[in-house]
Image (cartoon, rainbow, N blue to C red):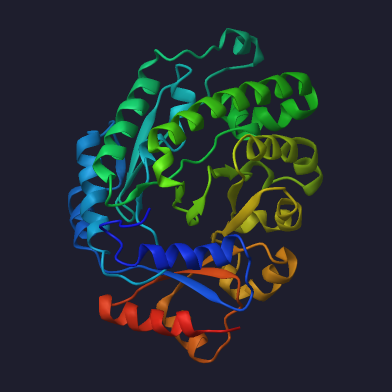
Length: 362
C-alpha cells in the first residue's frame, strides 16, 4: 500500500488504523472527512435517481479515478478505494440465473444491483447450480480486472458485501417466505446456507486473488484498510427478529465465513442495535459500522451507550462537521471510534480539523 498516488500520507494512516483495529486503543479518535466534489456534482447532474442498465465498467473506473484523485492531499484517516457497487447484491442471484436490476443513486455515485426472488418455493432449489460460465460471473471477473488495473498504485479496490446465510435465502425466496421457512422448512434453509457459503467462498476468493498479495491487506468502504483478507458481513435479516434467532441461524454462518478468511467487519442499522453484544462476540470481528435510519436516534446521539455495550470493539459512526467540531473542541468524543464526518467546506478546513483529531486523547 505504500506510495499510493492518491493518498499522500498513506503509510501514516495505515499505522493509525492499526492502532484502532488491531490494538483497539480507547484514548484516541479517528476521522474520515467528506469534501465538496466536482466529480460527484457532475454525476448528480447527469445521472438521475432511476433504474438503469448495467453501466460501462470503463466509465465506472474513470468515475472512481476522478473522485478519489480529488482527495489526494486530504490528511484524514481514509484510504482511497473504489467499490464495485454494481455487484453489491445482484451478483449472487445473477450468477444463478436471476434478473439483475440496477439502480442509480446520484447522492453517492453508486449504481447498485438487486434481483427479485429466484424461486417461487423450495421445489426449484435442487436445480440451482453454479459454474463459471454464467454471464454475470464473467462480467464480475472482467470488471474486477478493469478496476484492479485502473486503480494500480493510485488507490485500492474495496471488498464487497457478503450475501450469505439468510441474506442468500432472501435472494432465493424473498424475506417473508424465508422467515416462514425457518419454522416450516428448516432443513432446506440449512442446505441453502451451505450452498451460500460455497458460493461466497468462490466469489471472495476470486476477489482476493485478483487484488493481489502485494496489497498485503484489504481496502474497505467500511474500515478503510486492514491487514489480511477481511470480509464484509451482513446480519440484516436479524434486525427484524431476535437475538435468539441470530444465535440459531446467524452466528454459525458468520463465524464460518470469518474463519475461512482472516476475519471480517459488519454493519448494524438502527433497528439492529439489539444485536450489538451478540455480534461483538464473533471471533475475528474487526469493526462495526453503526448505521443511521429513520425512526431511530442517530448513532452519535447514543454513542456512549453503544460504546459501553460494545466494549473495545471499534465502532464507525457518521455525523456532520457542525456536530463533530464542537464536540472535538469540548473534548466530548469517545475514543476507539472512527468518525465519518460530512460537510467539510474545503481541504484546508478538513486538514486543520485533522490536526486536532490526531492530537486528541480521550
